[in-house]
Amino acid sequence: MEELSEHIEMLQNLLIAEATGGSGDSHQYQALRKEIVGNPVLKDIAPRFLRTCRTLGEFWQFIKYEYKSYGERRQFLWNSFRPLFDKIEGPKAAPSDQSVAVALQKFDPETIHHLWLRAMERRETDPEGAITLARTLLETVCKHILDEHGVIYESDSDLPGLYKTAAKSLNIAPSQHSEAIFKQILGGCTAVVEGLGALRNRLSDAHGQGKKPVKPAPRHAELAVNLSGAVAMFLVSTHQALPPKPQV
Image (cartoon, rainbow, N blue to C red; front, side, top):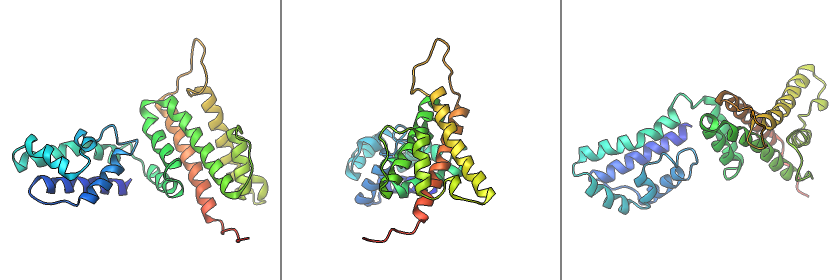
């Protein structure tokens, strides 16, 4: 998430300048602040003053009384922003996470990208919820693509059915190819989707459990989320690579 890390650094530097005699861009502050406090991965660890100070003027009124010296203000801001950098740049932030995030944000920043961020966030802390979100992500991607292709589907269709219909509309169903290697790879994608559906039904929080419930571990959630992200990115990339439909 290199771009997001750069924006966090820009915001930190802007606030340091404001707190040490400089003058920041108020519009830039509001835009960067909105990006961070509106990010489901970052909002809960964002500094409290960032959540409460909606303008640079409000931030100045806070910092000038909280710390008297420039050195104290710089140190306070560095410490305040460190959890954000650790979250984005830490060892858990894999390169594949960034690739999927970029692709899904370009495709649908409001719903699909938001689902991906929530799924990533829960891999360690809420494996059951992460597995549910992994399936919801793929269901939503399939429905968005089918909507754009004008393909009718049942609102209560299950994930494997939605995926097969979306794959056929994108010409990536195994039956649409004769080369053995492509049939094998595309068939593997279908098997992954079916497996995600079964994993979700077995391990997630979407269904009631008996006296001895099967509890997923973070590694199960990581597998489910990473697989769903890879398949979602493949679907989106294939959809975007298709030539535009001729205007009627």
